[in-house]
Image 1 (cartoon, helix red, strand yellow):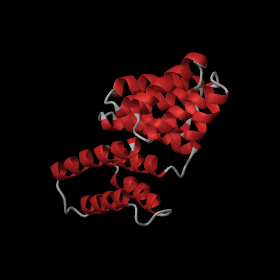
Image 2 (image 1 turned 60 degrees about the horizontal axis):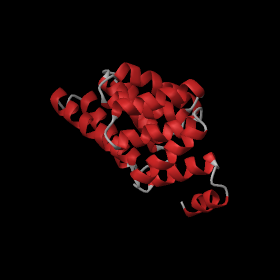
Image 3 (image 1 turned 135 degrees about the horizontal axis):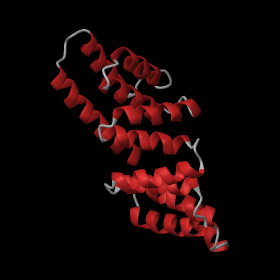
Length: 190
């Protein structure tokens, strides 16, 4: 954050530094500062996919899923292969229950960046919601390869295994999926 502030002090009209400081503010939970920097950066360079993607994440953190999707749509018009925007839009669609559309965005994101673990988990959740449990299990197991201690992937893989073996009922599964979607969304915002 301080480095981007220093860059802006030296070059106040540097939209890239402003966008990066906005992204850093978002990660630090400084939403007001993030909004100010990202809005100023976007005014200077309206076609910046990174800035629009960060604004999408900010709007999601503020509880505005529709506004977030709008920013992500705008980012993807400029940069259709922006994996972060595709993955985040897919995650939002998943949390809204639009699993088939979510899966399309998530698959596209993973085609670009196959080891984004949070997107890989989201794909497993979408497949699970669509009743494709064996496919979901493969995604959760793949998410565990780089990090065998990934609590979310462990929990989800266990849930799918229980479902496949008949040890859990559909209402339990739906409740667990909703908890996981909330957990994944919260994890992206931190």
